[in-house]
Image (tube, rainbow, N blue to C red):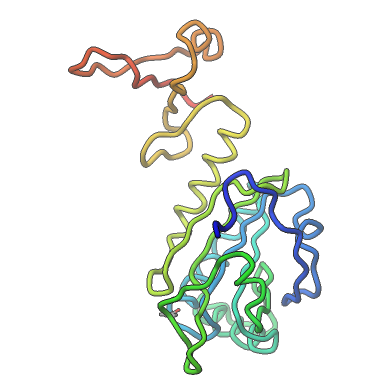
Length: 224
Ligand code: BEZ
């Protein structure tokens, strides 16, 4: 059975989190959202990932993106683990909390319903752990991007921030972002757009790269 596909309405699940009970769509409000899952509390790769996510949270907030994590342990465990994550980030005060909630999914119900389990990684009782899933949800509550990493491979949160910038740009403008694009770099004109339309939509100019085939499909324009 396929999991969530791009463009699908994201489920309006209810969950217990480190900031209380939420209904997902209410939690998001009009914002973009990132839901990212973790195999288990107090595991080393997850601790480094959540530390990095916490350090980058203000960058996501600036871009109107709300973050929320999920791990298959209890709220009590999440609260204790959060202190370790803050210490990993060298945050001194014991009273500080992470800048985003963590969902407690002890029964793995949400992880199963969202297709987040990693069949190759199991706990001591033989139960599968959660993979490293990233879902980016648009303000229309539809799935805009999904990434699925196995438990043994940590994610790159700078890349997740980069793709959010591309998703937000391309949601509002008829452009595409090329390989390794960074905000401010030139963007590409989509193949379906005629030369005439491109010329009128992009007054700062469209330029093409010469290719041996002579075809002019690599069309760039400054980021609008
Ligand atoms: C970790 O977060 O370190 C981890 C979790 C499950 C499997 C492997 C690594």
